[in-house]
Image (cartoon, rainbow, N blue to C red; front, side, top):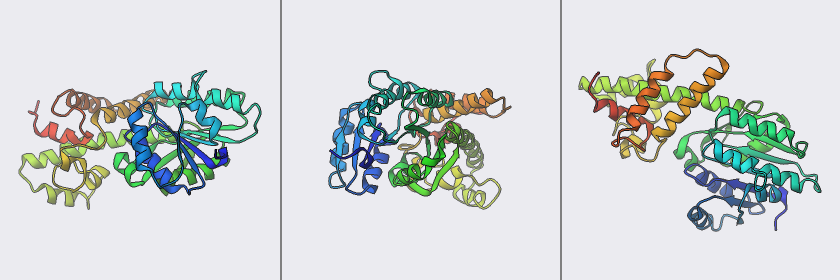
Length: 326
């Protein structure tokens, strides 16, 4: 069995976590063992096959086991409930495992959540870590990502890191760089800052997805050349990530969700969720907002229509184009 300092655990092999963990295994040298954990057995089996020849991969059953066997544990979990279960469960949680194993050992360990989770939950886990009997040896990091499934597959994700122990950042950065670009791993501040950066970014991205779709739909209704309109926008004041990197109009750009029937991107349901998280964060800190409520209403109408349900968020362009003006 590999020593904990040559072992990294990854919990959560979903749409984002699976390619992230695969890129992590590819990036680590063969002296490292990667531990994997997921509630879906098929994901484990598929991962073991896809990672053949890349280096040692072992299966674990819980966060408790992860922290006992590895000095770095990364998680990519879908929601607050999953985060609380994996980290805070008194029987199988990461912190319970840390407290049990560190009574006898003096190893330093890093635990980090890479999903987009409500700020309040991230702060709760951070406080629980600092209140733990293992606090002097365990550092909690929130490191949410930007780049979506395509970035996860390509290994080009951006990471926004928050931690109260800045001394661990070089180790965190070198680990995350296997799943993203090293120059795009940012230290944003204390625990919760990484999540706040991510939520604010998603807030802006969601609103610009609707705004860009509205603008291009106006052009469509005028029978303008939408490819040319996109070119003009992208060298003018209206340029944004949506128009330049993931255009909502089918056929304008290759290999983006809109050109494959809005499949394989950032689902509209998730986009609405993170926009609501941004709206909630604004309310929590007393920041006045105007655009969040009407954008949430638009996403709610689109995602509840069977024609657009489960599609990439840029499907709001199709929803607008096929809707009557009210």
